[in-house]
Image (cartoon, rainbow, N blue to C red):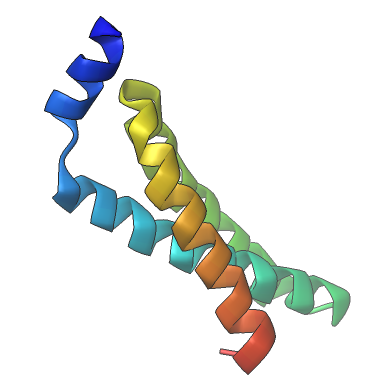
Length: 89
């Protein structure tokens, strides 16, 4: 219980919003990456993959320090994939 209280005290809504937006972009890029791979576009696939993994590190560093950041991560992830698949962004 003490750990939960500490996590809430250290929770920063600006970081949470940043994680949400980052994972919205990451999962959007992942959907785009998958499309590019299936269309055999190596430069686009490699470039998107590299940027994606760089951004993933940001999220990992945050939720390792405070597991509460997993919630905005999951929300951003869902919306990122949904938007790319639904609208082809």
